[in-house]
Amino acid sequence: MFTNIKGDLLSAFNRDDVVAIAHQVNCKGVMGAGLAKQIKNSYPEVFAQYKMAHDKVDDLLGKIQVIETENDKAVVNMFSQYGYGRDKRYTDYQALQICLIKLRDSFEGAVAIPKFIGCGLAGGDWNKVKNIIKHVYSESDKQLYIYSLK
Image 1 (spheres, rainbow, N blue to C red):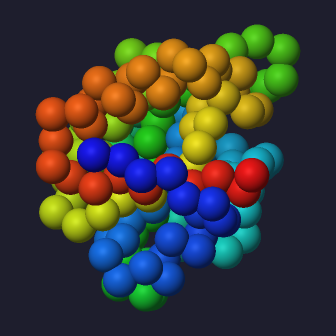
Image 2 (cartoon, rainbow, N blue to C red):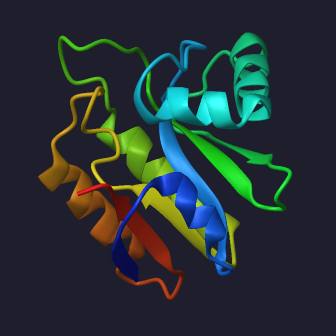
């Protein structure tokens, strides 16, 4: 089950039922643009843990990383793009689906993700991503909030 909400993804932490926010990250140890950069600036511990994982683990694609924050919530890094750039599609749809399944199965409370996850800087197609989300959450009673600024 998922619900669309207007607002900034980080504001999801203001909801009592939200236990985690999740976003897509690359496997290159860089959180230099978009939402990843915003999270890096707001939650430096998230970037520190992300960088440590990058330095220690060879194959992160399809994995998730859960980092608890000072507000007793969590930020989830979903490694569903290998590289980064603005010249082609970097979102790996299969890795994103695997990450979403792991996200769904990892939390009892509600989780929030950004609308167009993997579609902005990573070049994914929203219709494909939306179908992946529907597929993963269609049979679940877990709550997923999809946040959009527009």
